[in-house]
Image (cartoon, rainbow, N blue to C red; front, side, top):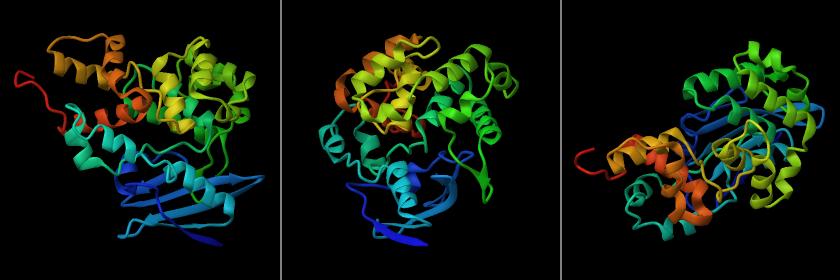
Length: 282
């Protein structure tokens, strides 16, 4: 057993970041994180909790398990500059005061982020999570009641019809299988965000929102937003007092430039909690 105490760079709250982050591969609750990870041909369990002093205490069976926690929780990705730059932003200021320790949690593989992206297209979030869970459980081994994050090879073994039976729409299933069989998804981590976006937007079945999910949750990038997100469309509608087409929401993220991905997360979280100041009519 390997034990480590990690100091997050910048403000970080595991309790905030883990809200609604549990899935088939991990349980995040009450300021703790538990997951099953794959190390070579072996499965191992990792566990992490945040102490009152802010440090993250991790228990794993190898150094690779510790590294998994570092990446999944985003502990090395200090967002202090984002907090400073937008502390007086008209849409984000109140949210940043209340949720400054929030960072989006990452998936164990890029393939899992891609699955999440195609499962979540234009359907309710709860149903999308059910589909993702069903596919992960069908594709991967488990240890301690939790499955490993799926690899591209594991998802690529499915026929689109198999995924359709698990709830994924036929076109989305076809796009997922095609990408998992024909792309080096983990290799995208070695490329710039600009290159990744150009590569993925050429694929049939992947729109700006799906690319944003892969960048944010699979690659851990903060510089590409959740464009066309339906929650952002609802926020824009409340701000502008009219029905808003999804593509119009791109305007919301323009001021945040290289922080557009993280701004998406904070805008959505703040809107859900009532921290975004809206016109009185809204």
